[in-house]
Image (spheres, rainbow, N blue to C red):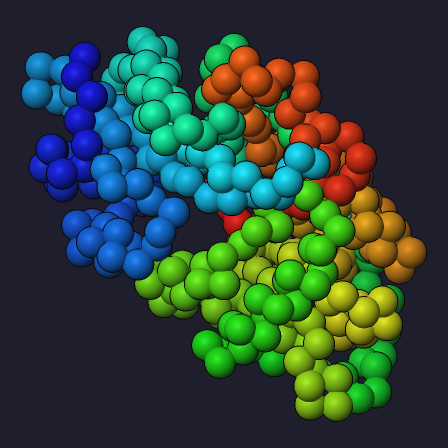
Length: 314
């Protein structure tokens, strides 16, 4: 098996592999667009396992900052991990991940992370490699109660001009939390280059015409709310009430709740918060300086201060 970079294989081979594994893929033009703007990607963009001229596995290594109990630190992240269905279970993806770990060590990164689902076969592979869950991901539900929209508040779809204010609100909302709190100010702009319709998921909350919070919603996928970033308690209640007022019947749903403060807020509004749900973020120590048993504590998973919202999924 030989390790190749994106520039060392034919783009069609990358597309074909991702399409077979995930049912969707980035073409060469989209990869070029992302590489030109998103600084999380390494120079290689992606690593591939090649054998006898066939591209059999893929790993996309990233680097970004997180906030740990020990301070802000740059860590590695693995995305797009897959192998050709014809060679599942033969170790290609695992060996390619080992190569990515070596690349992280060469960059003096001490920790590798990834997001996954506990429902897929890869979860067991990651656990055997030493990856550990950082914190439980929870979901919340509540039957719609015909709440009236609060006076002076309204929600509207976010626009590009809202992005700087949304980032400021995110920083304020996560100032006492750990984990994925070091979101670059340019992140949403980077993601918009990947998906021009991405902002359609976001709603900004206005109080007397001023933006005081935002959230994500995916009603077509059965998700009423996620990433409810509203620092003020009264504003938070207003945002939830506005979303509930749009659902006159049935169940209201909330996804990807990680921080204890968010759990408390939703429970105080009558939501049943439960979990863990299958989604998971895992981490691996790449050095003897960081013990595997310390990773949950470092990321805030044992104190309820861990936070990761869907915008930061990778």
